[in-house]
Image 1 (tube, helix red, strand yellow):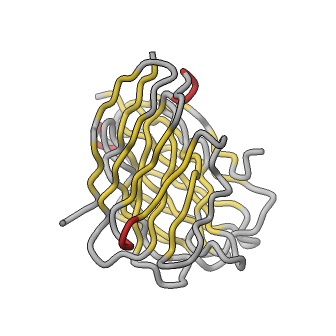
Image 2: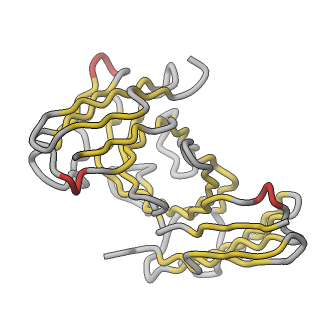
Length: 114
Length: 116
């Protein structure tokens, strides 16, 4: 059972275009994180959102956490070739004993062409 | 060290052999995680260590998989009688270990395991 559905799985765009990646679940998460991973490396944290409705901006990247804390989106404005990579969302569940245990989405492979 | 390190970076083995994968977490981090990642896919949780508590082994796919963490630092993931479906990148991550879900997990570069 995939608790976090990420879409699209593949995204191929031209430099300068905008894009949005979605992360959806039927479960509530206490926080949600977005990671970027390049080939041969581990994922690197981009942002953590914790409050329903929260919007965070990181230069050309905008992250949103849904009001019910079940979904999130990543929007990239004016994509650059350097944005190419695998984008992963990951949610942490509230409560329980495994604090910090993350559930990952399947990932979105983004390719930005010059 | 400055970051999480893993060894070996690549491991090719024959079906049925045992393998050991090593993870050196960031110094002082009490939480350590193992994940498995298939090509271009998301991460599958395997096991979680937090200080001296009993590890959360709920993600281990079979009894061929085991992990230990010695002295609260270095961890070894062991796969016995490897199968071709075990081929994947095995990632280790460490976290400072506070009981905050927003704590950052720092990932190592992974070990790419290929079972022939």
